Amino acid sequence: MTLRVLRDNAVGKLGKGDYRVVSVENGGRVWLIGQDGKNRYIRPDLIDPNERRDPLKLFEKDQIRLHEGDQIRWGERDKERDIFKSEKAKVLAVGPEGITIENARGRVDIVQPTDRIMKSVSLSYAINMHQAQGLTGDKGIGVLNLSERNLSTSRLFHVMVTRIK
Image (tube, rainbow, N blue to C red; front, side, top):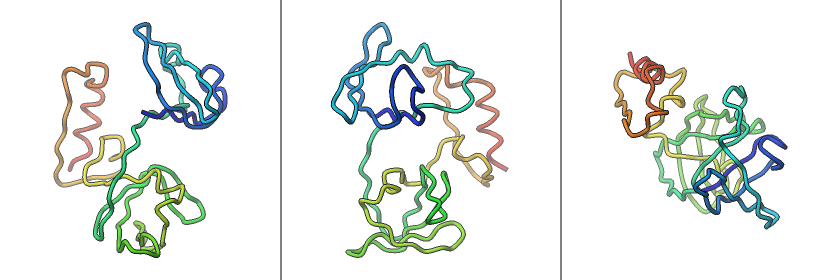
């Protein structure tokens, strides 16, 4: 599991960057190891719930295999290539020269697997309700899990059902 700090001093004394989650204590303290090899900890319970801009991202690194025809979704913005966060794209080809991708506006780029933007790519056959913001579909499957009481609220249920015509 990786924690990405988006702004310096967003939580405790963490600088901007990626931290690997090492362990979580019963008291809620989360131990991290930074890119510099130093151990640090944060207390997520002390994060201001009213903070408007998310200072953190928590994610698991995953390796995916891309094939011609795959639908993908960008997790970050790339101004140089006119790529927007959460935008869909299509894989046109995968070859020795790189991955040929067509964005939602028809622009075609060849991206290397080691390119920074590729760290944020995910397959887009299934997306969560917040990623679907601004999209309207004819069909959808909504899932709310009762065991996730803090995530399954009537407000979020309303968000989910309004994504479908």
